[in-house]
Length: 271
Image 1 (tube, rainbow, N blue to C red):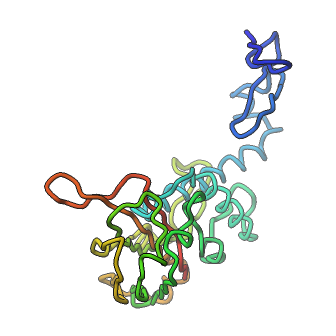
Image 2: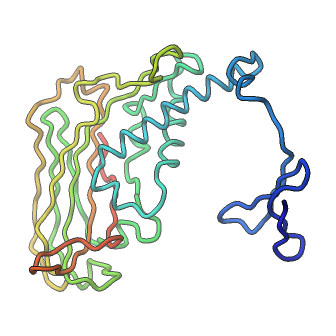
C-alpha cells in the first residue's frame, strides 16, 4: 500500500511500482518490481561478470573489517560510517592489480599507501580542527617503531574543547596491515592476507590525562614492537601511524573516564 506524504510525495507500493526515499535527499524515487531470481544470478551465464565483481567486493569488505579491527580505539572515535568509504578505497586499490583478471584481483595496499595517509575518521570535527598544534609521527618500519613528537600545548589556543570538558588525553596506534590476495571462487573465504605472520598486528598507547586548562610541556611517545620486520616481508606490509584525542570528565570515585562522542582521530603516517 502506498502512503501520500504531502503533495506528490508517495512512499510504499502501488501495483508493480515501489516508491521510496533515500536518507539525505528530499526526493522520492520510483522503480518497478521484479528482476532476476537468486538462482539465475548464481548460475546464469549472463551474470558471470556480476558474480566476479561480487567476489571482489567480499575482499573489499574484508579489507575494511580487518582495518577496523587493527585501528581499534582509533576507529571507535569516528563520527560517521567509515566502512563504506574504506570499501570504496579497497575497490580503487584493487584496480592496481593488472596481473590478475576480474574476480581474482588482489588488494595491494602496499602499492597505494598514500590513499590512507591523512585519512580523517571524523567529519563534524576533524582531528586538526580540535588538536590545533603540529604533531610529528615518524615510523621506522624495519625496527617496528613509531615515534610521536608533540610540541608544547597551550590549551587555550591549541584545543577546541567543544563540550568544555576538564580533561583530555592522546591515543596512539601503530598498525601492521598485510596486502590481501584472492583465493578463488571455490574457497570458503574469497580473500586472505598475503603475509599472515604480520597480518592485522597492532600496538596502542595512551598518554596520561591532562588538564584542558593548562600549559603542557613538549612530549615524545614511542611505540615499539617486540620484533623487527625483514625487508622481504615489509614489501607486502603497510604500517599505519594514527593519533586520536579524547576528552574526559571525573566519574565515581574521582576516576577520569572518557566522555562518549567527545573524541576524534586521524591516520597521520603510512609507510
